[in-house]
Amino acid sequence: MASVIVNLKIMPSSPDEDLSAIDRQASALIAEFGGKVAKREVIPIAFGLKALHIHFVMGEAKGTTEPLENKIALVKGVQSVDVFDVRRTVG
Image (tube, rainbow, N blue to C red; front, side):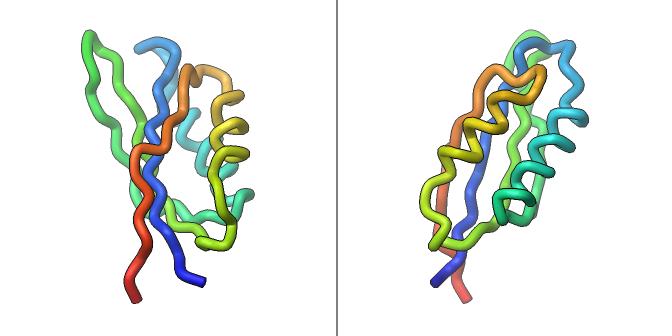
């Protein structure tokens, strides 16, 4: 089976939330799910609010990321979690 690159957008519940703490917890959950974080980005949204984009690689056989999304949504300070792109890797 091939691998896929999954791109998550994590929105904090307020501009005051600690994105680095959310990132640490989300990355640990991704590793537990069987993924490997490849890249992280903090994206300005508006009025001081920033989103956390985490790009990770996982096995295609794993199927859906919904269980992972639900676990990350329970992290303190997270308002929402969305997968905004999934692509199959080459090679």
